[in-house]
Amino acid sequence: MMLLLEIALTHVRARLRQTLVSTLGVALGVGFSVAMASLMEGSQRDFVTALIDAIAHVEVTDDRRNPAPQPAATAYAAVAFHGLRPVEDTRGIRNPTEAITALRSWVDGDLAPRLTGQAVLRYAGQDLGLSLRGVDPAAEVRVSKIAEDMRQGSFHDLAATANGLILGDTAATRLGAGVGDTVTLTSASGLAKRFRIVGLFHTGVTGSDEGLAYAPLKAVQILMERQNVINGIAIHLRDINEADAVAARAERLLGYKAVSWQQANEGLMEAFAVRNVIMYTVVGAILLVAGFGIFNIISTIVHEKARDIAILKSLGFAERDMQAVFVFEGVLIGSLGAAGGCLLGFGLSSYMASITFSFASNAVEVTHLPIYMSPLHYVIASALALASSAIAGYLPARRAAALNPVDIIRGAS
Image (spheres, rainbow, N blue to C red):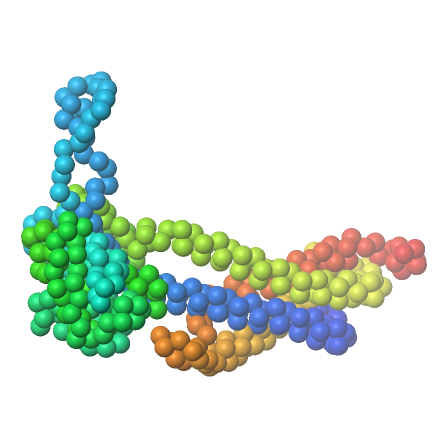
């Protein structure tokens, strides 16, 4: 085995320039593959982090996963309904204290009750439809980032003001209202109540900044005439990967629909999976192109060393020994290229992570490229490089092993 390795090293050193070019091709392929994978996974993780920080990990609503069966359908095997009007049932999670206590006994995270409904905000003769969310301020800041998004005032001011209102800064600008102004909110049932703006927030999401407002839970319950009723429970988990299991268990326990952040963004998760497939396909294509360089140099060596191959086979070297020599050459070039590529990839990733740039938006002043360095990226890129190198060396090696030493020595080929 050592003799075969020495022969392979001798062949590689004999064509040093071509070897360096092939090694550089593999190194560039591995390096840029690692850098691209770090950037794409970093952007994905950054986006998912921003997403799950902005929403509840699990949202329990007052919906039912399946509609309740009609009494006649449970009493008779075959029933046909014509012109049936279901009994009106006021929506909402009743006994919210009991429901939250039941969840808190086993959920590893924070919970916050919510009552959300549509309302019309009037100020200075202007009307604006928005989604009004009644919350417990102390609990809400533990399940969302709304306290960090405040531009004026403090979210905790809701706890000190019974009729306080926190509005998106875009909506306030459209109305010409500001902190300290009094506005009128009218519910869908026609009940009106006056609120005082105690703060403005900016999330960077246009829908929220234009059409979402926060108020104390009790005040919203009074406005919407739904005393002691909520229609949502937001859950923020310590481990976001448990969201699906927690949602399923909460649904079985309470009987209300519970949706995890993965289910709420299922289409987005599928898009990320497709993007990862595309990314690794491109990585494989880059390394495949680098493998052609190795194939070319080893094919040239096989052609030039035909007489040497004949002499070695005439001395008793088996065909598998000849194959091993040229496969070793391909793997050797691939290994050197993979090692250099890992260093290049680390350098490129570190450099990109240090780049900062600014936006004109007030929401983001200075940011950087989201880079996520994972050992898995280096392992995958190196494995693909070695695999392509071994294949690139194996194809010419088969031809070398099949050469007939008698024909070569006689000059027949």
